[in-house]
Image (cartoon, rainbow, N blue to C red):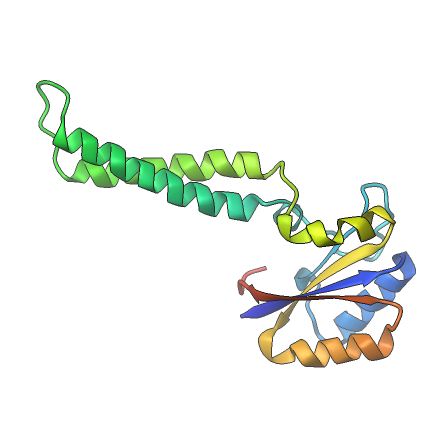
Amino acid sequence: MRRRLYVICPDLQAAQQTMNDLLLARIDEGHIHVLATRDAPMEGLHEANVLQKTDLVHGAELGLVVGGAGGVILGAILVLMPPSGLQLQLVTVVITALGGALFGTWASSMVAASVPNTKLLAFAKDIEQGKYLMMVDVPFRRVEEIQALLRKRHPEDKDGGVEPTQPAFP
């Protein structure tokens, strides 16, 4: 498991230096994501993608659960009160649950892709002021080491805290 560290860099040069130090500390570039204003220069930085910028993942998870539950309910209704002339079996519930889960995941992720990531709302003011938010996914055992490195080498950066858990995939 990884923990996500949030670091707020005051400008591009500080963000580039922080990124270089993280790379030298053997943090893979794919685990460092930078978010700034739309027109901010990002030379030498790994820009955050849609998964980090939006609530896409949360929306997909929510849609999966709600759609799956809706599919189970619809399937149960169809089995208990089938349309005239049809005899539906219990597999109908499984099929409607899968269909509902797929539809719910698709529909809610489309909506969530246009919603800013709610975990980043605390940093919105800093980003609007032209600062750079760096999200660093660090192995659990190295959190304190990386935080100490950043405090020592980059006193100009502001510690934005640690997110409790982060999936192992990038």
